[in-house]
Length: 121
Image 1 (tube, one colour):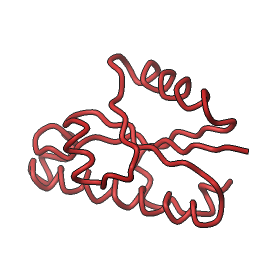
Image 2 (cartoon, helix red, strand yellow):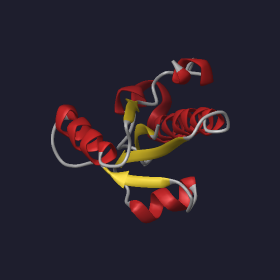
Image 3 (cartoon, helix red, strand yellow):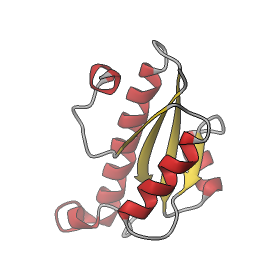
């Protein structure tokens, strides 16, 4: 059974990500938090792929494909999110992934306790 895990994230550009955290962390600190949380979530997803056949995609806002590939590597599938509200973005991501996968899950990066067991469930 083919499976896809989609991670919704943003390119970690100071002043444009984790904006609610800027008063406490500053623009650079908020961007670094975005970077660290994305990398943690991606590392967990990659660990999952060692035990099951799951394709991981990062659907992003901000930045561009080239910046995302420089950051996350050429082997990572990075897809720009469509315009619209969160529902539209999720609908589009599901539709694209369901064209080639039987099971699709979308997660964000704001779950620091996420682990392989949770993703497996």
